[in-house]
Length: 304
Image (cartoon, rainbow, N blue to C red; front, top):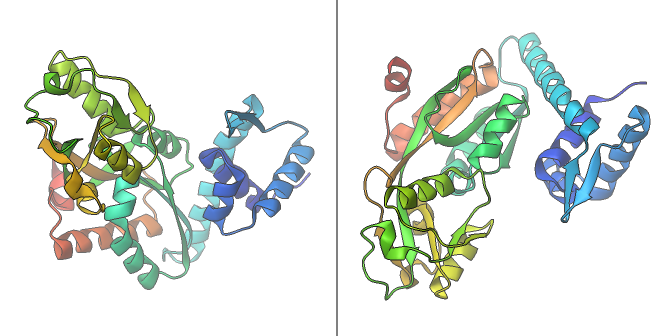
């Protein structure tokens, strides 16, 4: 029995996205091809790798075992590929990112990286911070841009930028000075694992206020539209809000310190900083200087 690395990449992409269609978009393939390759892999292994639950593909027990090994095998393959290339950036580089970071800060970095290193197959996968961390620790991601800093053993990182967090309400809402001013209101947010959602929950807890029902929406424009309609409140970064049409139709309230500030970090597993990641870190620091992004420099972070 021979399992191809391409099959493992397909399996990994479907496992991370929970959808053959989304995985096909990520890998620039047609969904039917991915479905065929997955069936072939299951037949080769003699096990079921996925189960469909609530319109999403979930890993079976055997699939969870394979995903861990697949991540390590693919990471080792890419590391070996880079080594024989003389330490030059090449091969696969899988970067995870929070949704807002991918929308606001990644376009410039991606353009620079693709131009400088066209031989690298850079893939970006978006998810809440909690899921990104899981993917990083399991070896499915080479690095991830998430809310930090993290104090977990075995991880290294450098800051990307600082974000100001704001609460959105309907335009005629009175000033929000504490969570008690919006107690019980429905909250539009990403699913559990989102670091901004956890910050918002901590804000409510700090003010001894009851947070209303969490309405999970996987889209910032949709959150904004719901707030405009007067259905509840939402939290997002000021930079994300500034990019959205219709932002003039909501009232913006800055949270009190320390809940109003968040720093996005680039994080990776210690000892796994290869040529592809080195190149990204260098370009990221250049972009920070050119764009004037706030936050400590790489040197300051590493010496802290």
